[in-house]
Length: 609
Image (cartoon, rainbow, N blue to C red):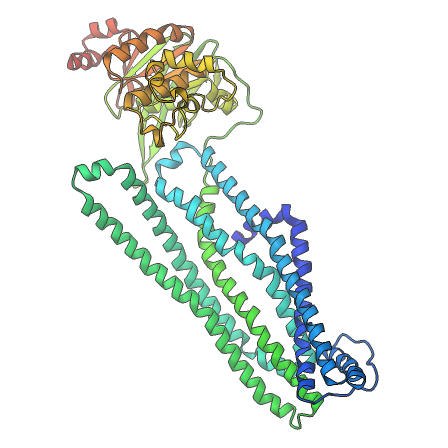
């Protein structure tokens, strides 16, 4: 119920459409019963049993008034023009009422279309925006394929199961209410007898719906897991083939797919049980009505038989919207399972929050200070936390080139990821010009930093668009200048279409070194106050790395650079070298000072040489 309330809040901007849909559905329901009422007099004339009504009946909101009125006008038509003319008269009226009824039905669907499509647009926008603002720590606990399944398959299931049910929810209740009102006006005892099976139907449907939701939740989870397996297979195809693991990978997927098949089969079977069950119970009720009706109308005079026939026809017509409404109930249960997974993402904790009245910042004026900073990742498979950084004290002054070195897993990348607030520190403070990082506007803070990582992220677009990503107002001359600093301009000009060449998914048409150089150009184009190079030259050959350093050093001296690297050639010219081990800074100084210490840095460099 809470999920339905949350989903219903998207309806707010479509109030006019909802009112229009409700009105035309009322018209549709009214004219549907009106059309059904004409069947009885039509058959009466057809079989020569015209019920004569001498005087025009007084107006009343009853089925008796409607029938007698039609018989009155039929009598006049038969008396003046004959039986065949009366048949044409009623057929024409039925055609008009049917046209009005079905036109109203179509208009209901017509005005419902922007509601359904618009709500799904809003839901996808909200979910996508949430995925963009969630902290990186959220994605360390999630499978990428499962997230893609939620924004794809789960959102689609919400559309199919929940919002596709809007048409039934906004139409069928009116039909049922109007049909029941007519039935009660004809014979309350017969109608009560017909509804005696209603509690039984409700109990059975509630139990079936509960099982559908349970199985659907598990099925959607398995679908997310299979999406992850697809993603991992495509991304790791080279490894799968290289290690002859095709059969093992296929067996793993086949197992998960079989589990999904079993659950999906159960959901389908249970879902299909509802409509036949409702129809069968309604037929039982109809038979019961027939038997009791013979007792209530023993003589079956023309007037009474007409009412009984109308009751029979209306109740038979009631079965259709009743079945549709029950099917909608099951469908909603499936949709609720998918909506639960969607809202798990939308409700995920946004840990990187902006304070009240944050400060703007455009430049690094003095220095960045780490003061007794500690940070831990929460282990997904265990309740304890994994401490990555411990009591870090470090000062980075404007215009300095600071190198961070150390063995793999020592916390180097985490240290630089704290600066743009991809993560927040758990203990201590990071100050920028004397103010804690969380006092600044997040977008302003991140604009100060240009990051280039070892795992290069490029998009399936042109070289030019990848370099200007997020910076639409730059000129072509600025793009070329940044590419020259990154030593990317020569190979770009060798491409068939130069800067307008499409580089493929994740830049797969480029070599590793070319991808890194484009990423470096993108960072330099921003003219960041602090350039962060996290193993940014690991894929470059020695000559390209040397040329890049020659071009970068003047830029770095004017700004600030933090270099995370293993290569001695990359770090030896830094103003300060920080050696990190087990999350702690164990040595710091220039290259010459640290070599003279004969400590861990000395051993690190000696091993390289």
